Image (cartoon, rainbow, N blue to C red; front, side, top):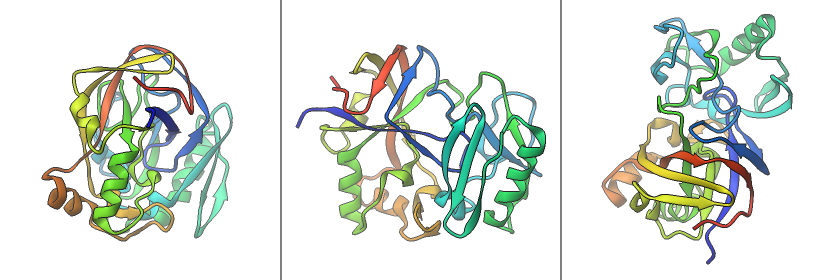
Length: 246
């Protein structure tokens, strides 16, 4: 099977929804545009105006209902958010009153036994990914299929919150690419590290309910909790779903 790029996803607000793209322009040394630009800080957050660890924000690992949120760009900094058991909302995230409305919107989706959401947090030109380095995430369809078979459940792409999905690699071959470079269409990336997973991937992204202990399945099957890899963009360019990978 030819190696190719099958899907592109971005997540404008950390842990709150994802959006599929047909194409995207990547820049050297930068994250995917509009990916984790905003995050919802909790009342327990300790923020200093820069990049911050995920424990400062609401997240699917602690509030699985968040995994069922979907988002669609409305242009600029406006996004439509939806959830199967919640009314929709379309805030402009750079308008303070709208940002406050989004905080109120997510409160019913958050675990009441965890620190409550209080504000939208943004750091200019910094992505609030789990990795402080400006990198993208790359995931492997063959690994997803192998994990699904082991789990006895179809684990959809949305569960894993990645940026780029590749097919044509062998199962877990992405882990062997660490330290190597890949060409994806016009873009060159260097694979830097595995992505160790948290409890967010135990939640079904359609229902927002925990349905399988995916972490235990990874441990039992392969002796680790890694799924996907981080990569640094070396040569930027336009990516399109269907691009060849080498």
